[in-house]
Amino acid sequence: MIKSNVLLCLTSLLLLQGCSFFKKSSTNNLTKSNSKRIYDLEDKSGRFIVERENGYIKNKNQLILKRQVFSNDDPTKKPLERSIVISNPGKLKSLTVLRPFRSQYTVWFEKQKFFTEMLLDTKNKSLVVKMSSPEKQWNGTKNFPFPKGKGVYCFFSQVIDCASVTGFLNQAIGKQAGEMYFHIIWEGYPYFMEQYINTREEVFSRATLKYDGKTKNGFSRFTLEAGGQSIFYLLDSRAKIQKIFWVSQGFTQSYKGSKSN
Image: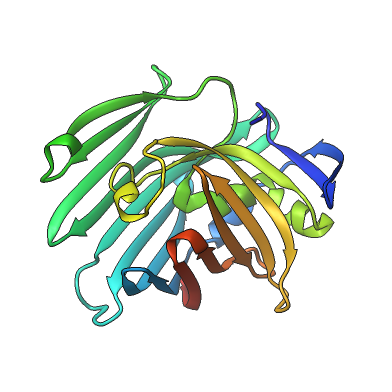
């Protein structure tokens, strides 16, 4: 069951030992998060280059993530996939969180453009999704009410950033145990689901991010369970993504290099 508050649950093997609220986290380090990181990506459709760029705009209090996917054969070409997600650091009671604000996602299938935009409608407690594509069923505007109850929401591509801001990552790594309960917003809906088999066609998914130990290389391993899928993240000592494994989709993303702004 997804709990209304985010809890750090300490476990030893299969035995639940206890839970505690996250410690307060600060947004001061967000100004230091500006960077561009390059990854190699391989899935069942081929090999690609991923550019992942983070930036924090202090006067607007916005954490922005830009992600682009290029062909591995010629990365100077136009992107095959592009997304931008914007969140506002804020408070949920005493917990620091990233509040999803807006996203845009574009993908090209057979040289045709498919676009979706999401906007938070605070008045009606819903997410407005605007779609534009060559397909009749994927056009127009839809409203999706947020699931009932309070809790943490994170864009899919910002899951690690989201968990870091709450303080969960540092605590879980320090205690070598822990789980974070929240909801994912799939900013690539509905086109993302067309790329990966057996993914649920939903905007919101209940999710758990669980600490799963250390690798022989010293990376911290976390498992994301969401929408019937399991995705594994390997993080370095600064909680930066080194690798992502999505085994059921034959998906592997590996860190290649970075460039600080």
